[in-house]
Amino acid sequence: MSPERQRQVAAALLILAAVAAILLPFISATLLTLALGGIAFSAGVSQLLRLGQDQSSGKLFRLLSALLYIGGALFILIDPIEGEISLTLFAGVVVLVEGIMELAAGASSKAPIAGLVLLDGLLSAGIGLLLVLEWPSDSVWALGTLFGITLLSSALKLLQKPSGSVV
Image 1 (cartoon, rainbow, N blue to C red):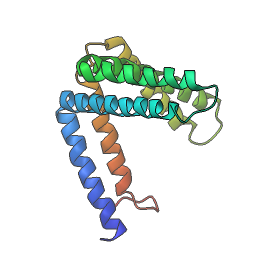
Image 2: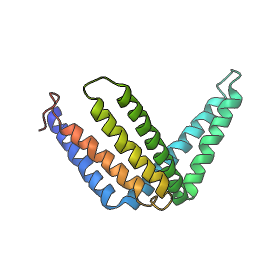
Image 3: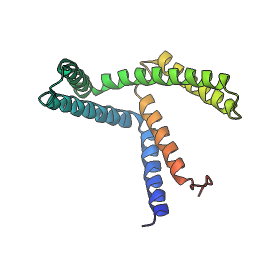
């Protein structure tokens, strides 16, 4: 299969996943939350396994890091809905801060795309602010919908030819 065809197949699969995530946001958010919990648990176990190999004075910090990962993972895995609610607030704060940083970058830039950076900052800050202000009521759908939009954006980027024109 040619690289071009592989990109098209990957884009099609991402579009299907994006549509599913957007149409079923609660399910996609819960699955995403569980996956993050599993990853955090694996990271914590990995930190614990490295304790025996570490001869430095950083063993205490590695142990604390492992316990933090495992504790957070158990919180998420035992009650994924509560974890989803917490992740929604975290995502809202991150997007809000990112939007504020983009606004500052756009306002201080003399580049030709400064207007686009300002627009991106306004949109990001607005979405982040809405997530924070509407939290926790938006938690059951926001993560799944945002995840679906991100997947769709990735698919559209895959469909672009390297020269920048769309297939």
